[in-house]
Length: 130
Image (cartoon, rainbow, N blue to C red; front, top):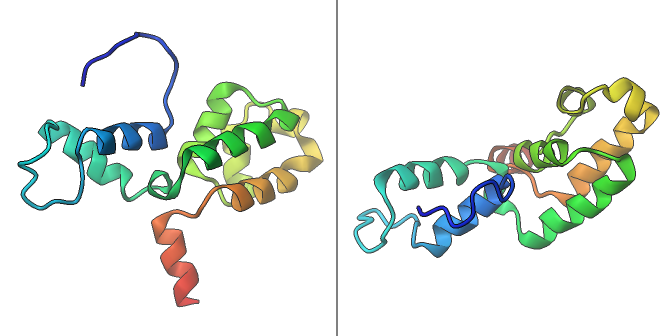
């Protein structure tokens, strides 16, 4: 992987996964066709098991737009996109001074996250079983 512009900003897990896919990373068992380093395949394999595998640029952009009304820092939105919290407790741990900044709107934020971001693969499987 070549760094084109250093300190251009943090990337979401989806953006890293999208980059690896564009470079040829995939589920091909031989993995000899792609020009991707073994370490990049390990990152790809990990990210394929996270919420990033079901996300799109549109969902990330929509999340960023929806989070503007909560006045969240870029790092907080990045954490939300990467982790996809599904409860108020998880969101509370990601937002600095959450009790004073968001107060009673935390449930609204959780509902927004659940509506905008697709579930993690493990969450999707558990919903199908129930």
